[in-house]
Image (cartoon, rainbow, N blue to C red; front, side, top):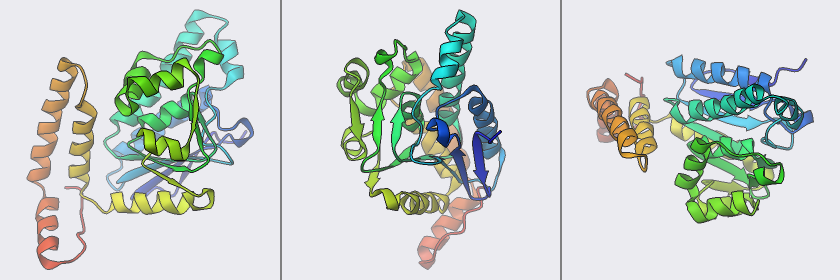
Length: 262
């Protein structure tokens, strides 16, 4: 059986590839079981600076595995476990203390779009297709995913994706704030690699604090306070780090900094 997830040469840049091209990289239970441990490993690897998440073949991820989802709907417990697994994955991406870049080509629909929204940065081909046509299948998207989507693109545009089942291109995704950059299909790999290299060269502790702070904005007062407290602790750590000394020294000496993440 083909491994549903491929990890390429972990180092400063971890490259995770959804590897079910025959199923348009639809999210299966097996994929969920491998993705979360892979993300945890990235978080625990001190060498890892950034994660790039892509899809094998012509699509990023066309959504949930319909066959598995249909089987799961045969029982409330199974359906609940499947939905909870997807939400747990999205939370893992969002809470990972490393920036995550989605490299999107082809379809990013349903769970695929939700994964892209959970990532920190998104590079997409101009002809990529983003959408959450859950109402066409009678599926209901999880509440956390709704919150995440509204924070990213606003309530009216979120309503277009969910209530009108609209699909948008990679170019439109940039205009909507769902993607950061759209490129020609043949340029996706290079564009994602260049962005990952740029992120990997920055101070890891600073990135971790900034990601946590960004994640706390627009949350409920209780959640925001928790995020503020964690952000303050991470920021204090960054401000006392050797990386800060290195960054300031490199600026004065007009050279590229060599950050160590400590």
